[in-house]
Image (tube, rainbow, N blue to C red):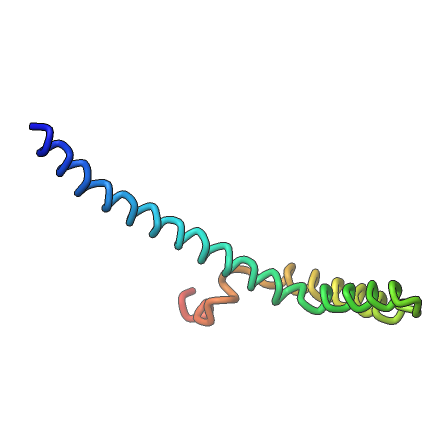
Length: 96
């Protein structure tokens, strides 16, 4: 009796570990897709802000990079207002 129970639980625990790993991979993939989308929208803002901070830390003037970051942020804000989930599919006009 004890051997049957041990064999049953051992056999089913592998399936649960595989299921947990699959769920983990799905969550990681969703986070990666979200990070890529955010970086595409705000990538230039991040690069400009980083460049401005690096120049300021080096004792130089980083106001030009700061203005570039502000302009890029305004452009990204306009894009996020105009883009919807339908505009990313490519066939949004055909489905309406």
